Length: 144
Image: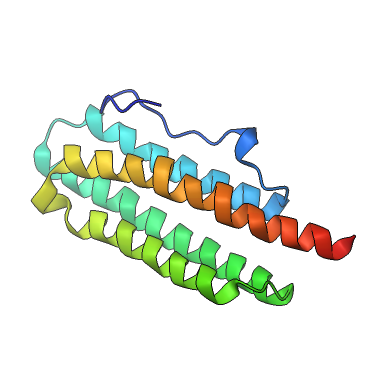
């Protein structure tokens, strides 16, 4: 996907599934929230743009935190050996989304929108496809 600042959509596809229905639904919801950021291009007033994007970031931050808490409980329940490292990485991801949110007025809405897109499409998705899939595989292997 290429960033054009206007029409790029953040979309969850089935190929991103990690074979855990609850986690997959939560991941999908996070992408749906982040995709709301594209509506910022429909707003002409700079202050309204900034406030709208901040609201999307705050909603995303709350839902990511909730998802991470659920995921961490799931890892603990299944005695996933890399739970602590995974939790540390979760905090790093939360710091990144928080940084985007609190700096909207400094970076501007266009830059913040781009950073949000990059965060979801590159950093967060990579986390899901590389790290969250390991949790799913670990639990699958335990059941065998």
